[in-house]
Length: 151
Image 1 (tube, rainbow, N blue to C red):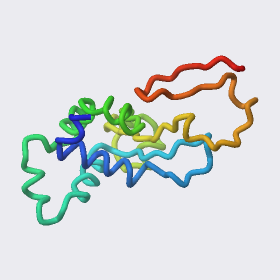
Image 2 (cartoon, rainbow, N blue to C red):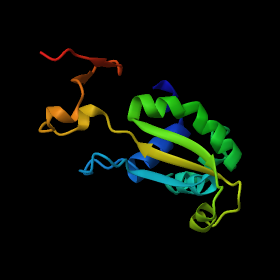
Image 3 (cartoon, helix red, strand yellow):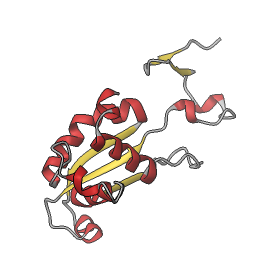
Image 4 (spheres, rainbow, N blue to C red):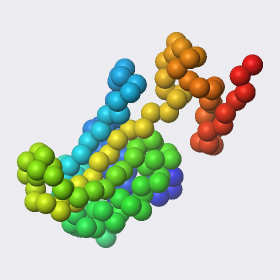
């Protein structure tokens, strides 16, 4: 977590994820809420989250990405921390279909990023029927998933 806590870029990414992707009121347990778009759009969105009076000085810092390529590299560095600590999955891909091109207003081959919240089984409601789960699963404190024998 130290990568996230002491890095302005990383903390801004977490804020973006929480604001744009994390939906604690989502009652549809089969659908992950997500954000997808070009890396340039994500970079713009991250900059908008910065305090206006400090935006210029923060974006000039070495740790702050200056382009889509550097954003991609910096996201890959914190990708596992975002997943392990906050449950946010980051997936990179290229715009390859007419739908991508029309939806995002980009050219074929443009880098896209998808951010989605992965719900843990512990976030399911307590009244979920036992037959929906093949076995009881409990998430341990250190984040590992362990199976419990049915009693």
